[in-house]
Image 1 (cartoon, rainbow, N blue to C red):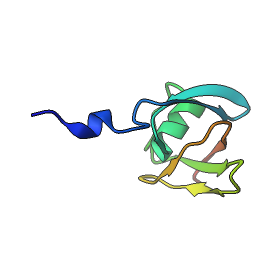
Image 2 (image 1 turned 90 degrees about the vertical axis):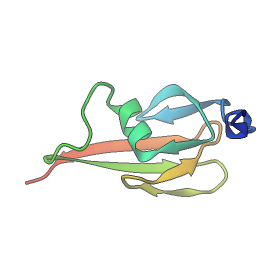
Image 3 (image 1 turned 90 degrees about the horizontal axis):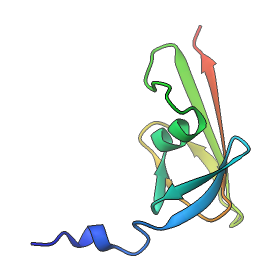
Length: 89
């Protein structure tokens, strides 16, 4: 039996987004909080107790917002993500 969700429209779509001022190619329909953090800070471990990441996004479609762990948002060409990290004190 074939899994039809693998062939869903937009599932493998390439979209150019901006993450912390750098162009990044993203493949998929939605980007998660964790994926945005990984694009902004490649190779860093997420989920450490001392580091908190803030993910804010803006779209040409007028949809702006923030993501927290476990959330995702539909991506659009040219969408801008600003990911910052702070240490808990």
